[in-house]
Image: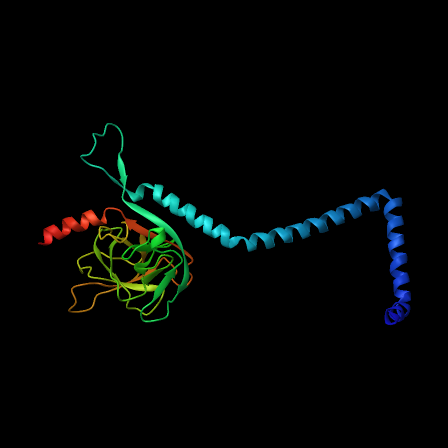
Length: 275
């Protein structure tokens, strides 16, 4: 306590100056309408700035929850969108109407771990069999395809990334309809190859490559990438095509697992034809 009194005694001149300045400001504020208005305006500006900062901080802190809700809303939208439905033929008579049954169901999930710089890359999702995710389901992002589910636990799913030579996805050129396989052999997380498109097919830089569908993994028409280069090697009957992937595999956050609701029926028909 004695040290405190010594300190206050030492700065008594500064304290007196601050006190007199505060008294003068109060007298100026109470005795002059113009200065009072200026003070109120300045204080409102300061308070408004503080509230704005607080709002930005709270908004930033809630981004995780906002992103989760947006992903779930997008999943509901995708489940209602016409692209997840297929026309029903022969079940009903259609009179000036369109009758559809749902062909795909999507489940929103968050990527909790991923790699993109290894020879074989994987992702881990924060949802699994309890949410309806199972092996061999396709996984798509906001801008393109991400991979294929390899295995699941009740709460998590392991996904083989599109940046892995273990998977070859059926794709086609949107402009011409010629189809081939997407195959990652470039060792570049931004690009992949499209193989098995014959040389007679017209392919140009800038062409859009999309999923072909029908394999029970991805719906048709999902954008995969844009043709970056086309080369024709002597003695090779197929184009050498490099595409720039539209999905950034180095920063994937929320994704959607796609369940083909007609896959079992399609597989049984194809198996019967193969016998």
